[in-house]
Length: 137
Image (cartoon, rainbow, N blue to C red; front, top):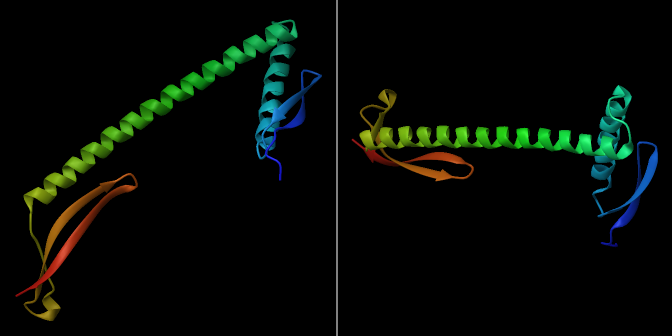
């Protein structure tokens, strides 16, 4: 199996271009080329921009603008999510600190109760509440 880039031919605005492509990236390259070609054809069909070079520059500017807006929105969403997770973690920690010992009683068993000591674990995949149980009377 070869790890060398292989040439892929894409067609943009009625011109063929050979592009070196890493193995496994062919579908992504072809999809990007189709998207770029469509955007360039759409702009050319308006008649407002003439010449392949000008069309390419305008489409590049539009795509960059779209990318930057999406990037800003993603950053804003991540910041908001982190803020909300921090607030939730603080609320859970406060609740655990307020009741350092939980007691769970099971009336059908009689007067047997389980005492639980809560512990909070925070990882990248979530917040986990752990209860360590001890049998009480």
